[in-house]
Image (cartoon, rainbow, N blue to C red):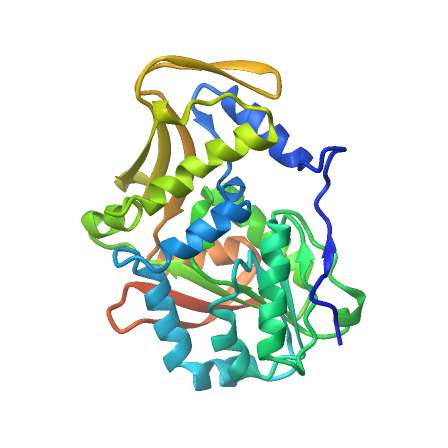
Length: 328
């Protein structure tokens, strides 16, 4: 039986801090529009806060996706078939994963996540639910190609990327990620990916700026992480969570906005923010059928099946690794 302790592919310095995190924060805070990639929201505390967000009444994506996974199990089984190793990108708590695994007769499960402690706890819990299933947790930044465990090298793969996490990336980065996933999973692989759908702005904005302010706490946790891990001096009282719909790019944007002018340091470097200036922390792009198909095709995946919830709020798409062509 595979160990639920897994392995780590995240490069850390002598203090146990991710080098990529330090580089991303310092580079992002130096830009004219300050910005930090959304994946750094997910330390252990951020991962737990996101799990809390998924239970909020305003946050519909988890309920809609769970509905699809619950009610269309037989269709997933037919389209995917048995005997694949399920590789979940950004597995988090793996709450939705059992809904898929119990229907498709997988050969193994490989959760990939950058939050190592959270990953190992979740992997152990899932392993207990499926005692006959080999589980290989891997602590890794899945934005880069991941070398999967040797034990599953010869097993056909199914990538699982639920939650519309692909929407957190600008199109260029999303295409790069899809291509990287194809490299990680190999020839003959499939990808089951969640994509949130375009809908009324008031519904979208409420989902990312809830009345209980859990999403605000999630966003501000990035500043807490910077202070803790990178010896930062950011005054959280001088920042506010902002979520707004950008219709030109079909996305919700999350920002941390300065309430007043202030200075701070991170890893020994000094930065300043003016009142109203923001740190752009997350995008959540929304899709329709055409834009989702184009994105997948650009990333080397051919869509083959699509499911939506009853209200048409969310989609799960099954795609196959496409064969490169030299001409149309």
